[in-house]
Length: 513
Image (tube, rainbow, N blue to C red; front, side):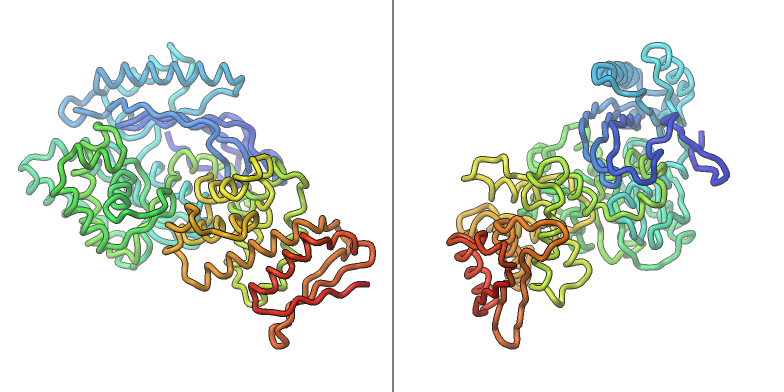
């Protein structure tokens, strides 16, 4: 079944209903998507900001439906039973959550197996769920659209690996282009004759043929799939990387070469402990690393980025109207968090305008981080006062934010830490500081101090209660207060203003009236 949208008419498959009926929608009601893959069956329930949905619920069962399929032509019997039990549980969960029907998509194993149609009928009879089977090119397209959920203007090559197949799709300025499927999934590679040498020859021939059709343009390589994520976890552990967030984790070709050697020289149990992955997943890593090293050697991408978003997210992106797709996913997520958790929703916008004079030369990318920080500056107020700085830091480093790389995530976390505290010595942020330049550290601290001060003034919408004016040539930072706001500038506020001025090596000046 091909899910590609016909532009002349609405297509709501596999949801059976429009998810983004109102183009002005800001939030997404709970939507459940099940991905029946060759190796795993996963349920994800999305909720939250429309442009940057969060994972309300996420459960995976390693069923191995495609194990042995290349030899037998049918789904693995044990895997089939496990998949049926998993799907029954997922439907029961949805019922208990009073959710609309789950949307179920199946990929290579079910579409290739002789008993795939019978399996779908059995699922329907036992659970009531309709299983929509997509072909390889459609799988590639949806995975690429999942990448676009996190990187709206992405350009490069998306590679999605499952148990029984591997797909490639081109991205150019946020548009999906050529896409192809192959049989380079680890479960199928296990059946290639000739041992590792025969397998590597098959991988090389297949990837070189795909390269000939895709061309030789050097671009970023986006990796989608559990086997890629397991390799990234091993790479993180090998380097003792300080931030264990997979989404937007990047590797170079040299990193990958070292990690491939590390995998070859390290026993499986040790690797499992380092990567914290199941034995079923770990068994596929030696096959996946052969595919990835050949892919990188052949296509020679500028860098390699891990995407936590794939088919499931691509299905959501499919239904987003252009007005929603065009929104900034980071800012949308921060707006949603502020509306839900801040004491004064909307204050972040005013705070952003207040601190802006301190960053006259900021790039558009830096300005969006400043705005994101201002929107998030108060979402952790319910935490104990002694732990608010830590809670803010955790929010930025560990929450489901997209549209920012790891250095930007740490910049945001550091700024929010300094929103609540003057000191970072002894905090967990210290281990992450190597991801930032000294200038970025200074800017994040300045932003934090500015938010710390501005939060005390309770700026009102539409008036000029307080304004900052930064005069670098005169080494002077001015605070302009209207007369009615004079009482707001108490001892603590004055101390914080002086601290802010010292951060830019300026003389603090207060002007009333």
